[in-house]
Length: 207
Image (tube, rainbow, N blue to C red):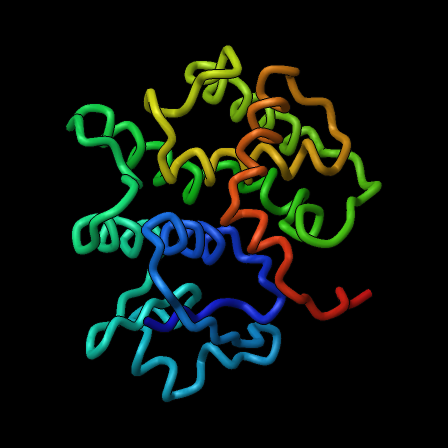
């Protein structure tokens, strides 16, 4: 299989799919695109990726974009450690959290980009909108995470990777985060596949 990712390996969604692949113990070739120069809009890539975004997974003659769709495909197609709970309600909860993290908290994502996670912190304070988004994130995460044994849905799932990354936009930047949530994010960050992603070579960050 082939996985297209951004050349900086800073896409949270590419990381989520990479963790899914490694959790399923699947071999994959990583191929990168420089999004800053528009390589993702080239005709050959658009022919492969319906949305012209990363990540895109190519499995033989089948290609699929959008990270949560890819992870669900991997869960349905391959044996191995589960990415989603077997229980229908718990599985729905995981999908809910994934969808929410991909569609909300815009101010937080803008003011704490993944550059603070994969490159270096920023000294810019959160705006009022950013603080409001952070409070919303903390309230939602606290409904799942209260002890060192907690996960989004009972046991580990791919949503724990996504939630930990969102929290780590703040934790790794040195922003104030409730202690149980900061500890959760740090624990999740020790997942072997996340550590493998963190170790990938990255080009210097512009500026």
